[in-house]
Amino acid sequence: LLALLEVHAPDLAARYKDGADTTEKVTPGNPYEVAYAMLRTKGQTALAVQTLTRAINGGEPPTMTISYFLSELQRQQPSLVPQLLSDILAQQERRPGTFSVEMLFWLLDPYVWRNNRDDIKRRFLLVAVAATADSYQWSDSGKLSTAFNLLRVTVPLTQKLVPGIYPQAAAQLATVRARLPNDTVERSAIAERIRQSADTLSQMITEANSASSPSVKNDLLIQAAQLAFTKKKPQLAFDLAMSTSSDDKSKEWRQQFLSELVKGAVEIKDPKLGLAI
Image (cartoon, rainbow, N blue to C red; front, side, top):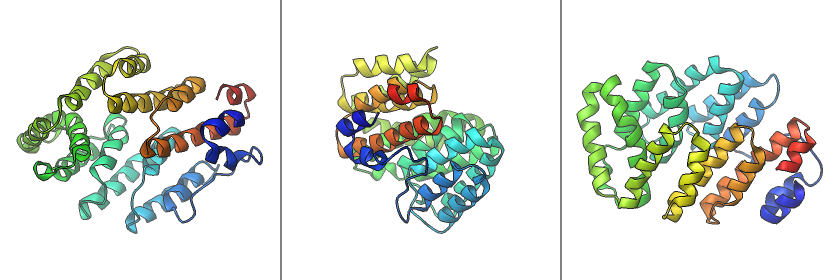
């Protein structure tokens, strides 16, 4: 395991080289990583939730760790998730812009796909539409693409859950779509094929292998790696993660993702899993 990491992620390997320490490694001063570390420590769930909530309420810039935190909390203690989802939304409602459009996109999973509370889902839809209200003025193609992906999922739901804002939401989606290249719009078709597939993971890999756009391919590989990890297929997750691009953003994601794979192998003390990774 360490040999593989030393080749592909030397900085991460150095953190684990001194032994199988199960203590969480966190970035000093990052309260979200501190909260996540607490969550992964037995008996610290309530304190972890309190720490994360305090960080959000205190105006700490949100990070992707929030998404990991919600996923882990859903696994450990799902009864605590709705209140935390509500508290997170409250900050965006009080201070629009607290969560970027990109962050809202990454929060689709806990707020839309895994959330059964329609009241919370309605609030998320309102926040998503409000966050993209001035997208017709944006010039950044990456931000427009993220807005498109966010609206592509949320707009159909507004028709059912918040019909009063549906015309505005649909107009925003149409405006953003018209300003994007065809390859970006193709992502929507890919996502729909994946959604309809009986084997989501295999379909993601198929779509990644056939994608003509490098960015589309990379995004699909990231999604497939994360799904393989949740399906307890560490070797496949590792292979997919190492197939992602070498740009700075992907490297940052890969570093955190490989860290999660390492922690999983160490925590369950499974040598076979360690070798697989």
